[in-house]
Length: 164
Image (cartoon, rainbow, N blue to C red; front, side, top):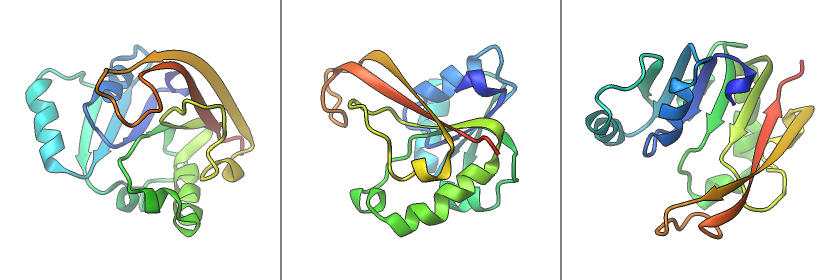
């Protein structure tokens, strides 16, 4: 993500691992993370009282936030929210919100959702982008991780690039 510029948005804070990594990257000028739940923000701030100065956490619902995000305002979006399965399968929902996320990107910017463990394109996004880069990287997760098919193997990182 950081190779696409210096101003980023992230949907969902979680444990803050990606937020810290993106914010600490030498090229990053500003990294805003939108987290819906204040408790998650509080836990993160307690665990990381000296977060990078480039990191800003906004307590808001991502989908409300992105509706008013300025057009061509960021170089990249890391998208890793916790959503129910019904939302992931709702075509009308993605037809409404994927164009808003695309609009928020500068030309040349990238939308990067969480990785897959199989090489397939996420249907929610690919029809909105002309250029898609897929990179394979090895990964190892915690032994207690249950949201991936395995705790190690290949991760397929999809970068959906705005070309116009």
